[in-house]
Structures are given as structure tokens and as C-alpha cells.
Image (tube, rainbow, N blue to C red; front, side):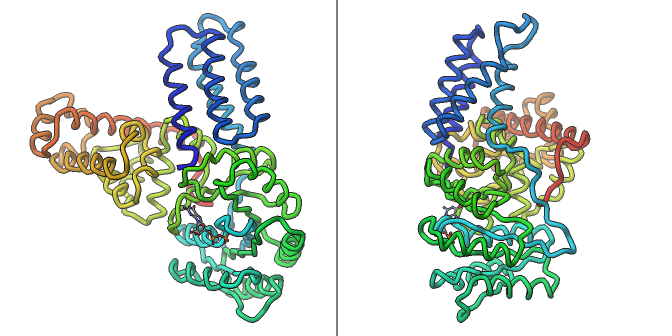
Length: 444
Ligand code: GDP
């Protein structure tokens, strides 16, 4: 995935840093150098990187730290916070209101993934109980309406467009009025893209915006366009003053750091990331979880949201997690869900520990590894599955029996239980955070 390379390099840099015995300015400089090189190679803006380096150095301020301070922890925490700050412009995210027509207008260049993303977002809100309609106001590109129609029909979302009306402002207005009358709660308007930032495109955007007065304008930014993402976002911001960015095509192998620079340049948050061509390939963006994943810390919340998106059976696990419980059976259910969700390369990074376990494996080998983990769970009895895992520490012979029954090794059984322990720990933390109000609820 985009930024996978950056993630790997950052995880490696932090990994070798945590192994070092001394923590002094030289070691810190080494870490910052590696991190800067990785960010620059991912197309993050040079000035941003230089600033990040300076800020971390100043905030850590090793010289003036008393001996009692855990310097390693301090450095890691500062690095994490500053990376989060880089992708978090501290803007309150848009939350559509129920029982009201929320109008969302999409802008972006042709080919950026706008039409696909409109449908993905429509589906996202529909899955969360909103009545959603799609409007195609792209009268410029032949076939644009057909494409939206096809996507919308596939997702079962009502749509509006015209084969005869050539004025996009009129179509947008008609679409919004039609859906509003029928009390649709979210009306998503797709606009035309063109190939470059032409005057006419920007004029058209302004006119549509003035006519439909969107509650939220979203720019779709192709993550594969490198450093030009920043300039493109700036130009669109000047005309359309969008309130959120959706970064598309993050499943590719491009560097992707241009999108990070675009956030900083426009002070606009990333709302979602497009992670593939399918309609379910849309992930809510959360700066902390994103950086957590980049640094190899996993993203359990993201995983569960993805599961929710897929409308898979997940009720018991969600309930358990809210209570701070995570049984071996929960792990088994999650593994099964992951198998259903498509390429492992996309999912593994979300699960703490599993990203590292499957690193270097291609999708086929990774899937085989997951299958073996499932065989192991399937060789457990109900008491074992519903346990918190301690049962295996108290009676290790159970592991030998399971390894034999599943045709795997004791070592592999241990790996599954380690994986379970990591996730159970995360569930406990998430439950604590939820209780203390540090985490928002699901939805918009
Ligand atoms: P538009 O011209 O901006 O409306 O772009 P489209 O929605 O037609 O998308 C252009 C191409 O990008 C299509 O082939 C889409 O399938 C593809 N696309 C869109 N989003 C993603 C994504 O997140 N991942 C991948 N791999 N492809 C995407």
C-alpha cells in the first residue's frame, strides 16, 4: 500500500532505536535522520520534514532532562505526537445530522477517483442508517452519468442525473431539490473533473457551490501523483474551499507523502482513504490510528470499522470490546472476517503484531499463515475458545494437543496465543479510553 514503504522504514528506525543501550544526542540525530530520509523518499515536503526534525529535537531537549526521565519513551512519544500533528490540522470533522438533508459536494481532477469515491461514501453512510442519494452533475465527460448510475445501482443507492441537460448547475440543483423533497438525509453531488486545473472547471465549481450550498465540500486527491498533490490541493482550496480531503488509491505502491503535504498546506483534514476499487474500500481516517499503523503499532479500531462496513457478523466482539473483554473465540471470529475481506497485505497492518508476523509474506503465503491460525483455533474446545487465554499457561499440555490436532507446531500455537494477548490488551485499553471519553463513537 501507499506509505507501506514509509511505515516499514519508520518501524525499522524506531525498532533499532529502542534496541540501543545509550540515548544521547548522537543516537537521537541518527533516528531523526533515518525518519527524515524516509519521509522525503515518500514525497513529503522538504520544509515540513525539516520542521518536524527541529521540533522533535527542541521538544525532547535531551541535555536538560533529569536522569529520572525515560528518554527513550520521551523520544518515541514526541515522534508519535509530531507525526500525528503533521496529518491532523485540528479541525472538527464533519458530522451529518439525522432528519436533515446534508449536502456533500465532491471536487477533484478527472481520474482522481471522484465518481468511485462518491459511491463509496454513499454506501458508507447508508450502512450507518442514513437515507442517501447520489447526483451526477458531471455533464462534461461523456459516460459520467452512466458510470455513476452503474456504481449506484450496484450499491443499491438511488441516483439522479440527466442525458439531455448540459448545464451542470441545473442538474445539481434539480438533483438536490428532488432528493430533498423526498427527505433524503445525505445528498452527494459528483461534479466534473477535467484533465487540468482550467479556469472553466473552477468557474463551474463555484457556480455549483453557490447554487446548492453544500454543507461539506470534499476534494478527492489521488495519492499516486506525488509532490504535485500539494499544489493541486492549494489551487482547489482557493476556489472551492473544501472542508475535507479523501485520499484515493492508497492501495497502490506510490510514495503517497504528497497527500500529507497537502493536508499541511491547506490546513484541511483527511476524512477518508480509498483503499481499492471495490465499493467497500473506504476507510475512515484518524490521525492517531494512522500514525500508530505507520509506526507498526496496529489499528484495531480501524479493523472493526472495516468489519462494520462489510456488514459482517461482529456483534459479540464489539460488545465484548466495549466491556474490555477479548476471548480466543473473538480472535478466531476476527481471523475469519479478515479471510473474507480480501488481500492480507491491506488488512494485516491494522492488527497489532500481525503486520510484523506476516511481513515479507506475499498475499498467498500470508493467507496460508492465517489459515493455519484458524486450524489452530478450530482444534480448541469451547472452554478454551471462550477463555482469556490463561488456561494455556496453567496447562501447557493443551498446546501440544492442539498442535497435534491442527497439524501445526506448538510454536505456531504459541504465536496464536501471543496474537490473542496483544489484541486482548488493546481491547482493554480501548474500553478504558471509551469509558474516560477519550475516543469518539462510530459514524460520521
Ligand atoms: P473520476 O474521473 O475522478 O470520477 O475517477 P473514477 O472514479 O472514474 O476513478 C478513476 C479510476 O481510479 C477508476 O479505474 C477507479 O476504479 C480507480 N480508483 C478509484 N479509487 C480507487 C482506489 O482507492 N484504489 C484503486 N486501486 N483504484 C481506485
